Amino acid sequence: MGTNYFFLLLFFLALTCAPLLVSGDTTEEPAAAGQDADSGELAATPEEAQRMEEKAREREKYRKKGLNFIKSLMTDNTEKGKTERVKNIRFLLRNHESDQWIALKNDASDASLVWNEGGKVKVIMHGWTPLTWKVSAEIITDQFQIGEAYTNSSQDINAIVVDWTCLSKEPAPKYFRAAASTKFAGEAVGNFLVKLSELGLIKEWNDVHLIGFSLGGHVAGVAGYTVLNKTNSKVGRITGLDPAGPSFDYNGELPPDRTKVLDKEDAEFVDIIHCNMGALVDMGKRVGGRFGSTVQAGHADFYPNGGSRQPGCSFLAEKKGCSHTACNEYFRDSISRPMPACPCKSWEDFQGKLCECTEETGGVNMGEPCQTKFDFKN
Image (cartoon, rainbow, N blue to C red; front, side, top):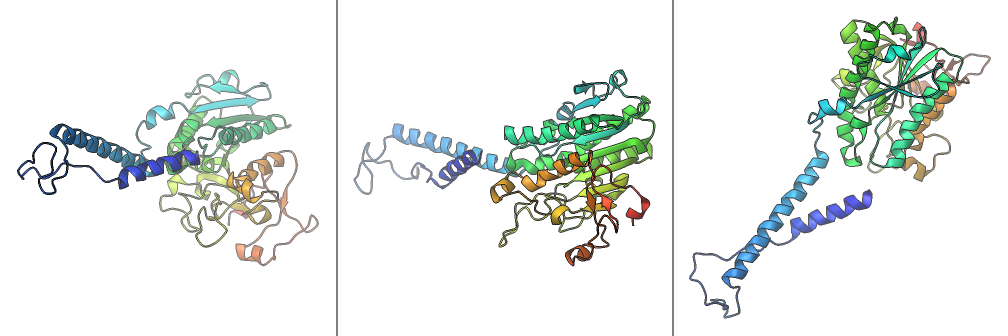
């Protein structure tokens, strides 16, 4: 993909920098056919001059096309066709009564046919899916594996994976278009949950747990806000798996409009796992290429291995988001085994190694069994 964009950029520069061929000043007396009036050298005939002008116009047309292409890479036109794209979001359900993922209608009208009465609801959302098939497939697979870990456990669960690739699948230069689309995907998820409630399938909002990776973390936040706005009730819990930083992290602070980003107001309890927090681009320092938000936006924020780089992720693997996607694996594993963490009063205490604890002195569990006690909220 990078080679294609490099070629297009060279092509655009060639069109932009090439001299334009235009005809001479038509106010002067025409020279004799085939002869330049000043130098006496051979000149273009009227037919040749016309062809040169046509070529110049054609060259200018392609130059403008190239310019418009470059501009399109930088432009967010999410609104265009948004309604139609949202209709293609898929909700796939699996529980103990089904050994496969079942696609539900977007109005949830058929959900009661396969719904596990009394089961808690886990809604799982993927992140940005670039136009690299293998990477996209791996990202979606991670979410299905989390859902299957739930349905293979002893818990009574209705696991729903949200496939919003119709909005998230964008080339790298249009990442910010995918980021802006989290608002529309989140609203669609929130509306779907409200329909489940109206059908009597969700009886208590406290039984709803939203789990979102990267951009999906902010989709979960918008979904929680949508439920609150429509029902005056909050979902029980949202877990952000390394919520995306670009477009959402304002130098360590939340953006002014918090309705489009995951924060602790979106659910009764919000826990966030930071695996790859830091700058996507940090000129002058070798700490760029990180995709997760640095914002402490939950009631409980976890920082495995410091929260920026994960063990086993080489420099090349980081280019493919190794540390970033590690959060999916940590959360999936936490469904079947505890992952203890040490509580810290502040980031400074963590950096000063003042938060050390052992199984004897106590700790809390990261991931699925995270304790949703009110003492986390302050």
